Length: 469
Ligand code: GLU
Image 1 (tube, rainbow, N blue to C red):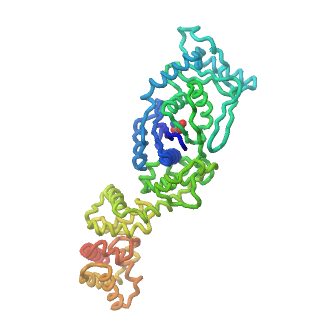
Image 2: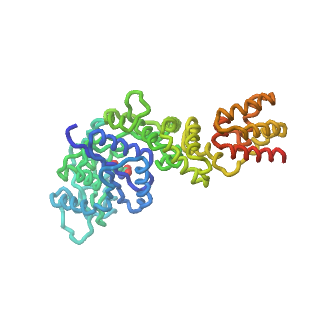
Image 3: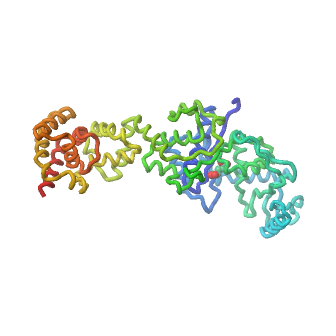
């Protein structure tokens, strides 16, 4: 591509950034990076009733978490009103827009009449060519739209889609209260920002002919469009809250890694052979609109979990630990109970089975509570009076292990097993319940080593006290 690529992602701050929007943003962002172009963030915040500052902040926070940096923006449409006013004036002066003094009731009548005549309901053009005839009446501005011919969207993905002009309204571009309308702002912005490619959801396809007419009136070349398919839930219905978490920040809360979510979302609609796991650089290098799937993609939470697990398995241990510690602190746990070395070793233990950082925090909890939190069912099952004697022996053997490392702990265990004529399975689980309170933890030697000698012994003592109760 010889031209300089300029793309934008244009969320409305009427809700959180959801996975569908994030995927659209990613396609734009990777397309720009692939071509060494510019990626712009433009927040469409003109819906005064539904837009909020909290959503605006949350959208930026979601991008911050994903690590997507925009080359320009965030622009906000509410801060660009002068630009829309200028554009409207220009169209009024050129005759491409006209003042319309019809009331909403008048327009409703026209629509009814058209419907009754079997025509598409639209404004009938009453005020065309009668500019300034009623200078005192309130007016809106309408775009003069040809009655004949067609407006063609040459979509990079779906091919040419034709819209007969006869069905298109002389759309309002500035309302009676002076505010510009949605499709007008979008087209004026895209023209002003010299956007070369608009990649967006195909739910916007019906807006595109309207925006093309604005470009034409402005005398600006339109961008190229790629309308991407929607994301569906496993029931093949459009993805919505019914299907579970949809907002990007919910995935952060649930313990997903941003690179896993990015990988999953990009792969959901874009492919490069059978490859499933991509680095950011690999996506940048290979991304192209041509490789976007034309059919709708199905959001599969299981596959996202699998991918997240892949990233957890291979991620930098120091970073995973920092993420884990944040969660443990949120739970009010004192991570200083383990040395950094032990905490890093714990990450290595947990990362082999956890699918999310939240699951890692669940697994790590037992190491950071000041006292053991007993699962009474496990206690009843495994800490029966008959186990007291072997547990005392384990306790004493462990007390003599120096340094307190896996090999020595293992030897101590084996000695007790032999002396007591017990099988490992009979002893490991009671010890586990004694030192962790429950039946799930890393290997028993590793668990003891991570806890350290002092805490292992005092937890065994506490459990022995419990058996004696
Ligand atoms: N603001 C629109 C939305 O959030 C996007 C408009 C566009 O990409 O042209 O759906």
